Length: 125
Image 1: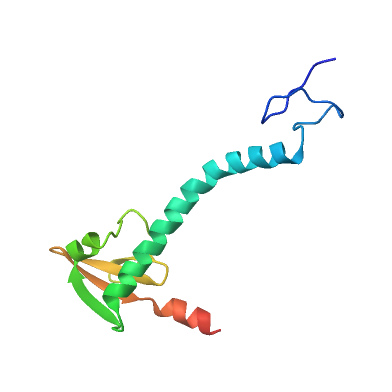
Image 2: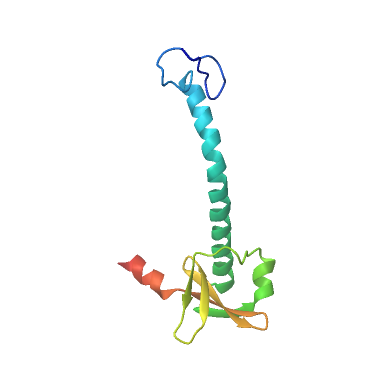
């Protein structure tokens, strides 16, 4: 008969042949450690998305649209690589969105910040 060891503390297991942990404490510790690695990446991405949204919301304020410097966006900590979706217009412009807030790159270091009307309509339903 093959001797099995706890996957967390490596003590010899007694009991069922398919047993993987010596007790609930070891099972929980093992699963928390394994899941934390996966969740850390997701937490990092979600935190940056929230930060990007907050920056766009702060700069836009109560305006419907606002022209600003891209440098101002970056100075606030906006990460261009993190966004939720893109919308292309019939004119060929591409808006980059972080949830309901987005921007259009106007060139020459200028951007146009907007709030999506589409998101507002869905929330009202």
